[in-house]
Amino acid sequence: MGKLSGQYALVTGASRGIGRAIATLLAAEGATVALNYRTGATEAQALAQELRERGSETLLLQGDVSERSAWVDMVQKIRTAWGRLDILVNNAGITRDKTLRKMTDDDWLSVIHTNLNACYFGVTAVMPLMIEQNHGRIVNISSFVGQAGNFGQANYAASKGGIIAFTKTAAMEVARHNITVNSLAPGFTLTDMLSKVPEPVQKQILSRIPLGRFGKPEEVAKAVLFLAADGDYITGQQININGGVYM
Image (cartoon, rainbow, N blue to C red; front, top):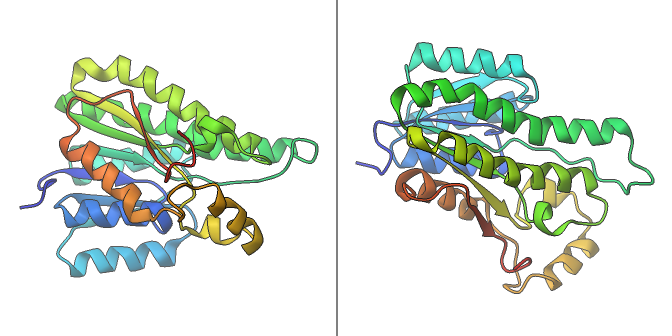
């Protein structure tokens, strides 16, 4: 029996990177996992097949989490299929890195919509289900950039800092329903997003990290599992998984 046997989870942006690692670990611990993706259909279907071969049920949910209508559709499908939802992981996120002098309104708004607005849409969409069952574990993926800032990432920093603040207020409001809301703030993690950074810049980044290496998606996933399975008395917090780059 896994730590999450009999529980149902939804992970957004689950087709790759941190989301994929989270979905894989939750399924390994017995959860039935809904995999949300926007454009990575091939990757999401491959992950679903992989999980099924390991004996885990899955539900594939295509949808743009920056749109309220996508959340209405996903929650309706979950309610029909399962009748409940125990865990929500708001993981989907994008970057549009530019200095403020070069940033366009579209650069700003697209990041805010996908990273921050989607978090609000997601929490408010699943709240009715979790309140009905008097149980829920919500984990919002932020970033150390939302705490420390980062050159050329004003939009990303604002969205991720907003997630931390939103998490605290949401946690206060739903605590009486036995729902916890926490955020994780990963540092530089080995994902497609980081791979796009030029090698000389990666070396500069490594020099700033006390542990001397980048994080692994699986290390973020372990923190999600902890909060979902064992964090019953933890809410409104952020856990930093950053190798010491921000203390």
